[in-house]
Image (tube, rainbow, N blue to C red):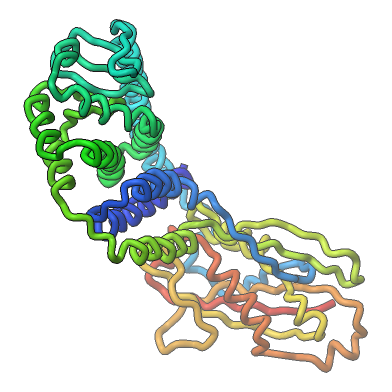
Length: 430
């Protein structure tokens, strides 16, 4: 459950960043085709980026991990904190339940809206107007497009600006703007709780209208076109699957039509999207390590795919111990060099339970000591050579200790939060 909520949080962050980028850099530039691709693509990318996982490869020796119990860890509960665990699960479950209820509500609303649109279309009569197939409705002063169907009110057949009205709707139909709208509505449902997602969906609709207006005024008088839209604005439809000439964003459309096209720095603004996308990709994507385990007898390496950081928080010492047992490996570099020794790591646990700064030098403040962790590796080297090699500060041993400590998930253990913890790793070869 928490993994789903964490994913939705990442999606929301990406959506906010993408929309702010559009609002600050792209909104006022008349590059409607590019903006169409960016708005729809970024809305979809916000859901894809958190699903991407980057893999790295590390070489390790096969190991056995022991816990000496000499560290005196009375500050840690040996058993799971049941009350904290249950309350955390209940809260996550309740939030997920609310999300699913909203999801179901808006999905049903969209489905009913689609059937209502289909009903309106079915009640229309088909007619050829100015060489175009048009659906005629009995409603007055209506002109809109549903999917690729152009629908106009019967009273507009004799309107003096009928050609401009049809040209507007033809752009929507020919460029398949319906697909952008249905995509935006579906993705908005998945983020119904996020107000920025609503702004993104509305920006997609506005940009499509800007595009249609731009195409019309290239062939018609701009002032006549705007005067045609004004009397129709009082009788508009309020339905999310339609694109209409008399849409609710009429004021923004007139402002955009009257704005001078400033594309001097358009290419630079497009390039600015690249680092923003890269930043989101690095910060919100998943990270996994492919660990290549090398046996002491130099057999063929075997690979194991493991996630570096679990998504669920830990509530007890036993979960930390199990995590170390599953993730600690003997660095292949140290094993081949027949290096044994200790790595002492200090980790600052933030008040919220996340691992903060990780150091290999003891700071001035007091610390809590965890059990000593003994990591046994295996090698074919002789016993005499083992006796000659002792290292207490080898970079690969320290790096392995820091890697595993930094990979710890959030620790929901009250006695640890806000404290400095010392982890002692003893690497030995047999």
